[in-house]
Image (tube, rainbow, N blue to C red):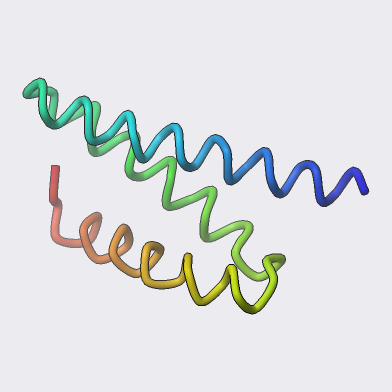
Length: 75
């Protein structure tokens, strides 16, 4: 039960970082956007294997998008 709560807490924070990245980018703070996306990617990569198959199908494309963006150096 505690492990499940921790996993969902990580997804809550991943969503917060993901949204923060969008807000930072819109306000011209590209460095902060990159940091937030890196944090979101790390939390998602750490947690994704613990998700249900349906949730994994939803979040794996997002993880790939974040990872590719970080490798390209996207803001």
